[in-house]
Length: 319
Image (tube, rainbow, N blue to C red; front, side):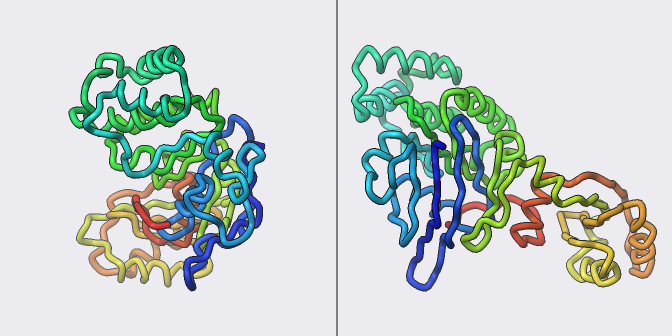
């Protein structure tokens, strides 16, 4: 195993940020940490990076304890933080070269590795450009390849595509998949599509605990539900009407949430429940359904159900 976490606990004053969690990550795996703000994801990753000391328990990176051997752990890691740590006054080449120097790489090794990585992410033409002149997507590509400049065993990615547009996110995903052939990856993300696309397994955290751990497909199958999606004119639906629908379907729906101009109703059998759903809607005044869709659950549905969130959307920050 590349990473083993045993009974890990982190307490800040009266707040238990990480509460006796256990998991392991296999070599070559892309492992995701998911959870709402304050779930404990970032705290867990900071402990793995040796930036925080655990209150109790331990974590092992390539066999080295984060408590007893932090220097050895850091030698095994590459890290891409949520906030940029690039030197914007230096060029692309200089940022990578400095990183290689810090990890003791020789001049020929550094230059060969820089050429290889710039080609990987299509930044060859920007090697002598100052970082401050790059786009956000280019900077993020540079952050990712800097993280693997020294050929680490494990790469930790904290919100690697935060704030990027959809097209650039997908480009970063492709590069992450390419480098995953040579390195074990642990990533945290609020983009459920990202986790579903990239991760071999995910751990869903809530209130410092791991509430589910499995492959994205297995987690979706575990729900064993269908989802009825009712779309409305924006003026027709609100929290009060959502509650009325929820009250009317007590015992029939396992979870109901408001997502923009739509109500999403989780049920065991959509065909069996749909007539009752439409009957409840008929009791509400001035409510016109624009469309009805029945679909299988996504990883986002799993996340909402397990994390206890009742609304969907991207959240950022937290522990």
